[in-house]
Amino acid sequence: MSYNSELAPERLDAGDTTVDLVPVPPVTPRRRAVLPRRERRLAVDTVPLLTATPGATELRADEITAWFGDRKVLDRVSLTMPAGEVTALIGPSGCGKSTFLRILNRMHELVPSASLSGRVLLGEQDVYAPDQRLTDARRRIGMVFQKPNPFPAMSIYENTIAALDLTGQKADRATKDFLVEDSLRKASLWDEVRDRLHQPAGGLSGGQQQRLCIARAMAIAPQVLLMDEPCSALDPTSTRRVEETIGELREQVTIVIVTHNMQQAARVSDQCAFFLAAQNQPGVIVEYGDTEAMFSDPQDPRTHDYVNGRFG
Ligand SMILES: Nc1ncnc2c1ncn2[C@@H]1O[C@H](COP(=O)(O)OP(=O)(O)OP(=O)(O)O)[C@@H](O)[C@H]1O
Image (cartoon, rainbow, N blue to C red; front, side, top):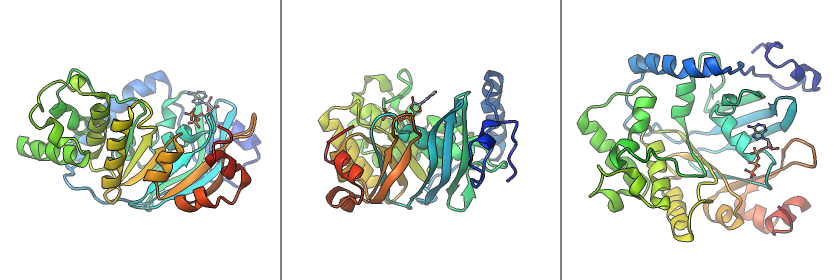
């Protein structure tokens, strides 16, 4: 792909000439206001309803470099997140874990000053290819955030299938009923809410709300589920329930989770990537590998110190 130097001229001065540069169009307030509506209209006509998960798919980040304005915050980060497994992103605050996660499903470009180079491949599909719609990327690569964010006034039922409308998928009542039950079961919430599906989601506990957000993400059959510190606002019992849910989902969807909790990374993930940013330097991956090996026999002394709580 050719690189449009008008979009981010600083990139050519940054000495990254070997990187396969991907242009991120400038996202002006006007563009942001218009784009989703147009995409939704297109999608309503063309996107069939997905009632079955197409299958967990490998996600690969290739030489990702990211900037906010002139400030480089990630430097040539490459990572393969295997299909149907859980990859944990660990590392101290500010080393770029969330930025990396948001690049994976094109949320980074919502920040007006943000730009990036590199490639993200979902299976064989380039997520940033010019013919890829933003809504498609978000549908295939779902996200659960640190703070549960259901629509509080909407019912549990409506929350669960809210993403159908947002991604332009239409469904009849029977299909919706099926999806609601199936998604809530996947999120280990069905038994707790089956008798109050039409009550407001705002009445659920924080942990239940977070599992509702997982159900909402699963309802549109993503191939990858990104989780940005999904338990940091939860009590230990709710955390345990969400971790169990991750365990149950792992074969249906590829999971990438950012966590500051080393015990959690050890409990839920198959492999870990340790991010680190030296003072005033962009974040890089210092070490990547099998979680058990990373914790018991890290290869880099900085990983050893971090997983043993010596810093961060
Ligand atoms: N919207 C933004 N505008 C400008 N700079 C940002 C923005 N978001 C993040 N940054 C900067 O990018 C760098 C990486 O931040 P990021 O949130 O990705 O790190 P992190 O490892 O996820 O941190 P934490 O663990 O505290 O969430 C930080 O220096 C941060 O200040």
